[in-house]
Length: 623
Ligand SMILES: *[C@@H]1O[C@H](CO)[C@@H](O)[C@H](O)[C@H]1NC(C)=O
Ligand SMILES: *[C@@H]1O[C@H](CO)[C@@H](O)[C@H](O)[C@H]1NC(C)=O
Ligand SMILES: *[C@@H]1O[C@H](CO)[C@@H](O)[C@H](O)[C@H]1NC(C)=O
Ligand SMILES: *[C@@H]1O[C@H](CO)[C@@H](O)[C@H](O)[C@H]1NC(C)=O
Ligand SMILES: *[C@@H]1O[C@H](CO)[C@@H](O)[C@H](O)[C@H]1NC(C)=O
Ligand SMILES: *[C@@H]1O[C@H](CO)[C@@H](O)[C@H](O)[C@H]1NC(C)=O
Image 1 (tube, rainbow, N blue to C red):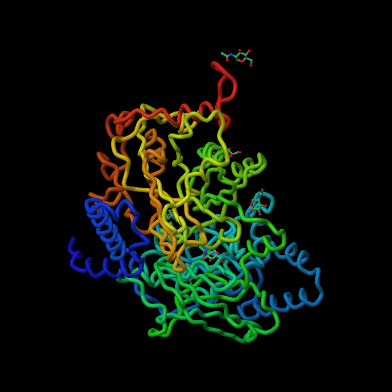
Image 2 (cartoon, rainbow, N blue to C red; image 1 turned 30 degrees about the vertical axis):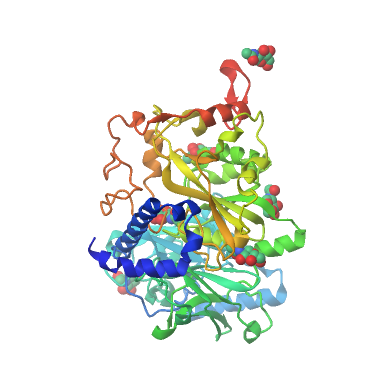
């Protein structure tokens, strides 16, 4: 722990920033012993934080600011000049604006002709390159990638190597299509890395592509990037990597400005606004005065970035500015009341667990589910569509940004504020359960809310409720139990874990949106309530049958926890005891982590959700 000398200072800063009285649960404040544990936890937390900071991905800032997006390039035309190709497209676009109805004709006629729409690319972990295409292109590109179009497309890299571009989805907040290409081995050898160009046929690369100025722009790095932006009624929230993690402290807001840029017919308009909050990856600033941008204030091409004032440069950005949030607009249009309780979670390949989780929580009071999907490839869309057809309310948002669980939850707190009052943050292998429900013949929508709508003895309003977790072991299961996790796993470890999960009142969330994954910092005047295991507990089906566990732990989601395969932090409490750094099944896995038999939730869900009887008995979520 070489870096521990700076720990006290950092802790002090964090304590200042997070206003400790809000952040510590009551139970911790009362007991000194637990406080120590919490301190150890914080220290570990920051050690992990530093390990990450100095990890191999640390890079220096670039001077690029807004990278010039890849301009349109003409692939199969004989044009030798890139500018000429560009002019052709501009003329076509003008025709479209004037004549209307030109769009479909152009798309139809261009499918084979153009591939190189405006793109901007980000180097992601594991040599993946995320290529984001401008909003004009999606129909065209999807047609050419999906079945009927039949065509494949490729990334052409600076050293003339190509790799196939895989359709990753449409980014929900900018409506831009995203592709992923693997960076070829030989391209990795030479720095700096440049932006690839999307092409249709690797065998025919015209000189206009070769001369594309995009290839002279450096690839953006995922760890120094403005990756999302959201508008509220009062301000704009930016999500930025690589600024506030440098020393593990938050730079004061006056070090930054939000920069709004619009390029129209060759003229560039820029408006800047002051940053009012700078915490973790979240920055807030007032809306810009758009009169400088001319009459069209709904232009989808207003880029937004964060300027570092002293360095006189902006962080590279793939984010765009919209005046209002789409959710707000829809709400106002439909006059929808807010849902009382929603649930948010980050997912990757959890489709097979989803129906059980959604069914259970829907019946005990969750009205809406928001899934931040990290590029799942297990038919998530089909499963979600089925659930919605059956009357559940499940929304998925593509969320590809690496190591952004905290920021994702901050994002969700703002994004869902128009539709939800309370938000539950937990994973699809976690089931809140209250012993007082055991005798209920049926589940009820009032069950979960009874846990946070308590009359409070003090005058402060409860703004957040947290539960402790029981970590369940494989319980002798060798495979995924077909009747579901609540039926299959019945044995957990001795101690209820320090780890907790929370339900938070979105009105109470501190404006900085600060959170440490499992809970948020609260505004003054709101209380954080910690429930004991006798009131409610989270059944966390953490150590599942080996086949499941292996897949689950391959990917880490938090920004502040190292990968389990890295031997950096062997003592982390997040690490699985008895497990090495390799995904090899430990001997006797199926019997591990089994100290206490706990059939309570199994019996309860059987009573509530089993259909049929005898050998024909099935859980409602079973297919
Ligand atoms: C890529 O190929 C073009 C011709 O197709 C050539 O002019 C250019 O020098 C090549 N670039 C590299 C880095 O090999
Ligand atoms: C997804 O669905 C397709 C067809 O519906 C099926 O062939 C495939 O096995 C499914 N994939 C997974 C991972 O379940
Ligand atoms: C889900 O809830 C949202 C927010 O209240 C609402 O706008 C939407 O129409 C609902 N969707 C379904 C399928 O019920
Ligand atoms: C998403 O998955 C990638 C691995 O493909 C991982 O590096 C990243 O941390 C994940 N991000 C989140 C937010 O889960
Ligand atoms: C939600 O909206 C309320 C009312 O506008 C506001 O006070 C609160 O700070 C918002 N919460 C979040 C997380 O944006
Ligand atoms: C099983 O269900 C059948 C009809 O669905 C019923 O007649 C029978 O009594 C049930 N048996 C038990 C043991 O509940």
